[in-house]
Structure formats: C-alpha cells, structure tokens
Length: 428
Figure 1 (tube, helix red, strand yellow):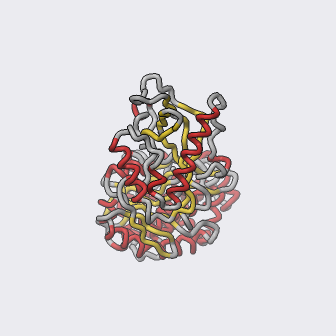
Figure 2 (cartoon, rainbow, N blue to C red):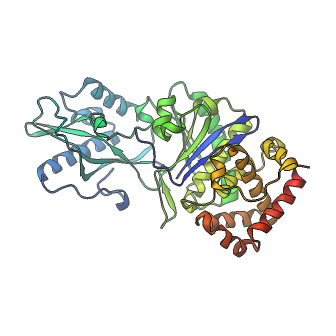
Figure 3 (tube, rainbow, N blue to C red):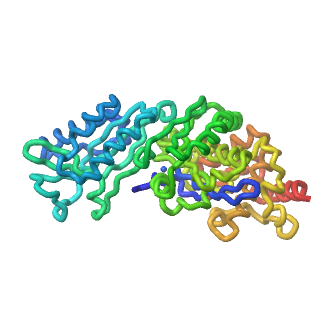
C-alpha cells in the first residue's frame, strides 16, 4: 500500500510539554480531471479493450457517487477471489458517510507484463495504469490522485475487474484510503471534518473540538489565503497508519502527520492534504498537547504551497511550532527543556542544520528552531516573521546566507548573536 509521495523530504520531530512526540511532514474521477494528474493516453494497440475498460471504470465511478451498490459491483469478475469481491462491497459501504465531491478513474498507457500471471479461465488479462481521482467536499479544491494496481480480465466479449492485489508480486500495489479499513464515521464543523472508524470516536470528538480553533489560530498568523478547511484522519491501527503515511512512520512515537499528494510550484497549491493522527499516542495527549499538535500540523497544511523542497528545516519546523505554541500559555522551559539546559552550558554557535534534525541531537534542534522563530517574531513582529517565511521557504537552504541580509538587514552571524542574547534572557 503505497504512502503519499513525501514533499519536501523533511522529517519533523514534534514535541509537546511532558511528552516526546514525532510528526512527519509530507510535501504526500473523471476523464476530464485537471491535466497534470491525467496519465498519458492509453495505448492505441487495442482500442476495443481500452474503450471497454474505460467504460467499466466510468460505470463504477457513477455508481459509487449515486450510491448504487448493485451497479458498483456488477463489473466484478464472477470468478474473482471471493475475498476481493467482499472487500469491494465493504469499500462501497464504508464510503457512505464520506463527503465526496468527485470520484473517478483515469486510464493511462503504462501496463504490466502479465506473462507470469494469467487468471484461470480468462480469455485475456490486462493491467493498465489506473489512477483514482477523488475530491473531498470543502477540503480539496482539486482532485487527489492515487495509483490503483488493477487487474482486468476478459471472459467472452465482456471485461471485468478481477483484483487489486494480484500485481503485488510484480511490484505494483493499490493505494488504500481510510475506507479500505472499515466504516467511515465523519464528524464535521466549520473548520473541516474528522474521519474515523467505530472505536475511534473519543479521539475524533476531541480532535473536532479543537479543529475550528486550530484553523482560526493558523489563519490569524498566516492569513486567509488557504483553504481554511482540513480533513483529519484517525486510523484504526498500525496497518492503516502505515498505508496513509508510510511504514517507517507508523509507530507509537508518532502523534501526528501532515501529508499531501504533491505541490504545484507554479500555482503554489498542494493536493490531497490530510492530517493523520496516531490513535495510540495522540489519544493519550492532554488537551493542551493535542491543541498544540493540531495547530502545528495544520500550519504545515496552510503553508505547504509556499514551501519548496530543500527549504531550511529550522524555518519550516520552527514556524509550525511557533504557531502551535502561540497563545498556549506553555512556559518556555516546558516547551524547550533541553534548550534551557543547553543555554547555560553550551549555547548555540550557529543555526541548526538540516542534518541536526535527523541526528542524535534532533530534539534539541527542534527546540532551537522553535526559539529561533520566537526570537524572529520578537524583533520583526509577527507579520515580519510571516513574510520572512514566505521568502525563505521558497528557496533552498543554500541561499539563506544571501537572502537574510536582504530580508532582515542581518547576516547569519548577526542573527545568531541576537538569538543567543534572546536565549540568555529567556532562560536566565
């Protein structure tokens, strides 16, 4: 089950008072969907096959949106694995409450060699490139696109959908959404909605209670030029968490993850943005800790379109923590205990590097990043910090030395000097 494509490739280790938490930041239909998401036209070698399968996919999309289960399942191969047929019925039912604005499939030209995989009694088998294109109402301005490893079979003159797992031995896997893991319960409000499953109601209600306030808090800092509605997902367990964010990050140490399918630098927009909460670690958070976590992650959602791959981590994560902790009343020593100790013994001599956020001193680097953004807000003002983020986050870290004097009037050495004085005053 392929996770969203990470962009930018940055790991964000997220802290809240009295708890060590980790958050990973990913910068992770119809034939008439937006052009950048549309695969290349299907091969012309077998126009009848292409036409039939495309019609099959269109029928399934229309049936799902019309809530017609019989039509949705009519094109399943009658000789397909019974488990697959049941999972498709479950998928249809699990989506009943999800607020879909669009749902369809895009047929592409890439296909898989099936010489080693021929379903029994099939006259022909075909595995073209297929992408699910769907849009959540209110949250997604443009459709989200995900790869589906579908195997189609022909029996006589009719084509069927045979499997979405048969291609796994050949290296192709079907993307899984929340609806693949159980009935979806949707809890909504002005700031978006929370999708959970039976058993996840407590965390879902807690997240929903914080969602509107989190969206307002982020908007107060960043401005109104973002969707201002967020989809928060509460997975049922590790398997679903892994499908949504990747197996390397579906651990109990991760409290929240912001994911997106991709970012369009030209329009400065991102598609498929979601905030995913780990039910184990996020569920154990105190009210203030959950509030900080959601505001941190929703900040990443709001600023994603303005953030380039390779932008400095001290800015990306420090700014998200600045918004997360803003107005929380959490004392600096509780927000950054490692930094408080370090200021007395070994105050920073430079800006934290991207490597620091992945090494043994990762937690200290995140606390330094938060305090650095707090310092910048204290001298530039909050609008100045936001403008600094907008400019620096569009540039690779290698250009920071050149851009800082232009934006602030200071070089890196002057910035570090002023920050050290701020730290000494903050942690006397």
